[in-house]
Length: 497
Ligand code: ADP
Image (cartoon, rainbow, N blue to C red; front, side, top):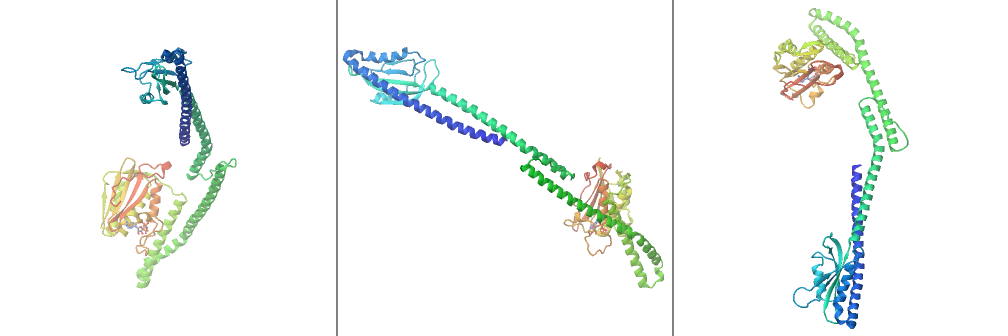
């Protein structure tokens, strides 16, 4: 709207200025033409009177001219079409020739170059100049001058006509005011029209934006109101079609995903019972392995180990399907993460691998509201991974806290993580070693992250190839179900970030 109004104001201003210029030129030109013609007739008449006077009263030429000037002076100033200035007789005696004028003129009303031209010789000359009478405002004027010759005495006189252009100036200011008013009215009108049109167009567009935002925020039922057959109506129809198609696709994918989750959960449940039986049978065999020949004993040990892994995998899958179904529940209590960190540093899994566990910043309590079972599971998993995958000699478990959150970092100085591995480690079934020489299910970190998110916290990883990696668990002091997805600020010192 602003640009439209500015553009129209510019165009109107330019056109108005050009028009005004033309009118001004036209007015002064026509006035100067008539003024010169009028003056020419005046000169001829005066010369004729001078010529006539020579025969009747040879000495009366000069009075003839002064009478001419006086007759103008005597005219009412309202009806005066011009002022007259008579100079002469020229060249008689020393000093400036006498001057007689019909009104008291301010000095400089006669342009010096015009005067010089007139004094120089015969002919009619004219100029634009200014007419400034003593005691009145100056106005633009046309000055016409010529020489007159008295045949009797042989004297020459210079006669000047000064035509005021004030009438033209008044007309011009009227035209200027009319143009100004017209232009202003036009700009206002265009501004008003632009305002109305933009409102008509913008209102439905704003409505559409609000609906699209709500749709993007997840209310898939949102549709636009369609009225009429204009472009906005067509846009609304297309938007509604797109929304409906997206909604049905999302529904379809949701159904599919629910079906898959259900399938995993059902399969895991179904496998549990036979697995328990097989597990029991394998326990019996395992306990009796010393009585078997070495090959059978080895097979029995293998059977037991793989069945343990199978059971772990099944229980991990069941956990994940509980998260997916939104059925995971928190049993909240006050948990001191400093104590958890100290216990983790003492975890026998580290000692078994010849690794030194070191607790940092764990000497003062760092209490959060949490489910101790899940927190233990996360930390145990992180420490086990550090022992299992890193090949590090030292594992640091650091606690840092601020008023709103507590972070617990498990840091090792082993193989580290490279590229986007710090993100991929949390993918289900992702493992850096596809040969799976280290056992494990590839689900541990995925479950740990779900556990952290369930508390409204985060679990993030950083690492540098060959230098080590750190896994930082950050939990809010208080679990707020309304702000589940908001991650608290990680306050821990990051070594590999
Ligand atoms: P799992 O241990 O059962 O394989 P996880 O989800 O715990 O599954 O880990 C996934 C993968 O992340 C591991 O297979 C390993 O390749 C990588 N990983 C985990 N912790 C570390 C670590 N501290 N250093 C290097 N790699 C790790």
